[in-house]
Amino acid sequence: MFEELTKQVAAGKDLDEGQVCSALTGLMYEHDDPEDKAAFLTALAAKGETAEEIAVFARELRERATVVPVSDALRKGEILDVCGTGGDKLNTFNISTTSAILCAAAGVTVAKHGNRAITSKSGSADVLKALGIPTELSPEEAAANLESKGFAFLFAPGYHPAFKHIVPARKLCAERGQRTIFNFLGPLLNPARPTAQIVGVPNPSLCEPLAKVLQSLGLRRGMVVCGEIAGTGQRMDELSTLGESTIAEFYQEKGFSVTTLSPADFPLQSVTLADLAGGDAEANAAITRAILKGEDTGPRAEAVLLNAGAALFVAGKAGSISAGWELAQSVIADGRGAAKLAELAA
Image (cartoon, rainbow, N blue to C red; front, side, top):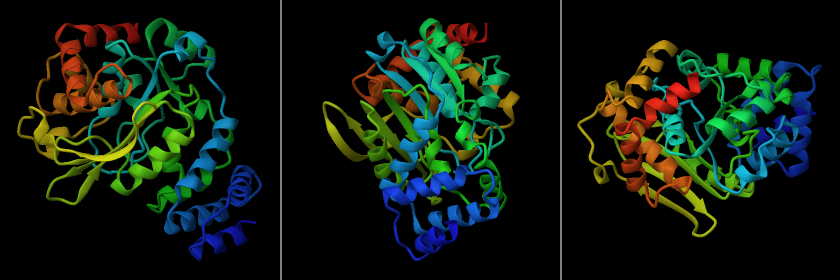
């Protein structure tokens, strides 16, 4: 089967829904050769995955995920996820994770879905563990934390048993420096089924198609972003304080749009990429603590304020990204950021 599908995508032909389902079944089958799976994933990436292909993969994998039993009461409001696909290879500190905690401190219910580091020194699971925040909650524990603390981390491998026999092929691709469709799928598979989400991607061409996939999955509010490092040609899977950012967004009440955000619209200090550099989990945890406690008010804090501001806007907690920035800033200033960090680590 893989030989036929690999030839098709290598010839530049897209897969229909039935073929995507067949491919996924093969990827999950333990007795198929990981090399064959890796060859298919490589050919699919070379062709370029369509929004329709990504959407079918996402829907099928979501159906196979272990679902978090979130209460109907919580679902009446917004449940937010803030994450990036990774893959920008810039080794910045954990901007999305710090932003997610800050959003929880602002009163948003945050279901953060993530993993250990793959393309960086510290993934979301790594830095949260270093902060003392539980990272391997059962579905019931995660639901309870969402109710009582407004935040839960969902460690991806614990919620996606279907990935067990896909991992060897993904590892082969990673060892060869080859990205796969699974680099995009992670943020789309949150088992708490968030109603609002902001996703960072490392290429602006992905913003519109992935936003349309999120919309097709039934989210009420969503934003997919990619920031540039001005003058370098590099991109980051966050909103950037170093250049313009591409944003694809949708809201039930406003429809769908693709826009550009300029850092000139915000009160930013002079910043270089080195100012946003991260380290291992312990180093990044120290950065997160300093920002949430208001001890770091420099370029790293501003990167978090920008991304948290956008996330608060997406969650409906602020009327604009600028208003979200101001809200995030006040949450740090009045001690709510530090208090939430302490609560989550208790």
